[in-house]
Image (cartoon, rainbow, N blue to C red; front, top):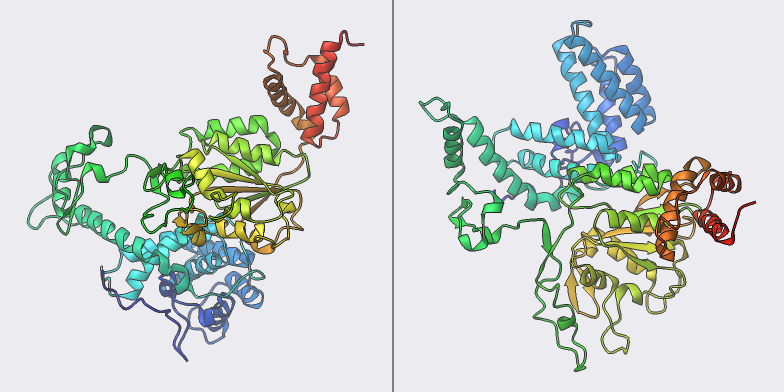
Length: 554
């Protein structure tokens, strides 16, 4: 397991042979020529020949011909649905089908999922993760077998793909690439997960020789622990103190104490800095300035316990952003810490994009900070300023980590469409792209500290009025969401929220600024009849409050 040599390079179809079968593709084998479109043709063509020995229902043949002629996600979904219908009817006895044909149709379902996942379908990626796990669990535990090992690697990669929340590329946006290069980075996680799953599987599924399973659940648990090599049952975390020295489990003689186990999600963002030279200036020492987070395990903020309440709070202020709220909150239900890919929210001016991004961060506990790109002529506010300059300082990443003392704060990049094109002291867009890429942000070198910083869990939301002036490489790194202008149907919710903000800004108690009455609502509705900018609505709200102070309404 620790010295695998058989999964060190891509597994391509051999010349003159058939394309890889579906299980091999699920385990990370390559498509024909590294191209999913070409593989679809190679896979379907034999089944569409008159000499094909297995009879396939005509409705499937029609879809298969269309898919071969013009591959697309929609046709793959049609094929999957039609094939599944054939299987369901056969199971129900409504349509007798030969056993050989059943095997072909089952493979059509699985194969269509593999193809759809390769084109970016998240649902298909999740289904493929389940298929990969099922095939792995049903095979002999041979870690030297590239298919067995690859199934676990591929399962993790499919799970990662299903969590990216990006729009499917379909055929027109599909980029050929080696599947081996896509999944090899999961190798370390796969080895650890394979080991743990093997322990669990052995503990649950393997009865003791010559003995039946005990009736007492505690006795069964004790046997399972013995098989898994656990030294003693781990007490609840709340009852364990670091100084207890409790041994939690043993792997190859290595023991772990309560002090080694984190009580909550967290990570070290700045590790060893012993290689960093001291600054020449006596009054500045970057290492000393960053000391609060160097070598410290910063917490990762967990999602709110009640995501429904968080959703209600956001929609109470931004009723026109329901689609975006759900898009950002939905993935948090299965995460131990708040996380989303970089997000770009765009739409007409005055729609509340920046305010929404900031409020989302506050509701989620991410302590948001705002970086305005309007008028930014160079990259120094992002990258930081090197030592030797009078204005030497950390980059945005270290500044926000120092400010918040959490590992996944939210940075709101405002006016992203106004990013400058100047390359004097670096280009701001290029610097931002390095921070948005998971690979580079995990080892981001701060020029002032002269040490690597792990910013891979930092959250980013960029706001923009248009996509036309945003560099395409920057767009490619983001989940792009459009925020439409609020309509007149959102007036009462928005005006009530704005009224509360104006009360806070002016220091007014609710007794001195009560809710709007019928006449005031009529005035607001008449002057905001088509909806539009929230800035204009705020001016209307302020005008109504000023009219109250001016005297009687006519």
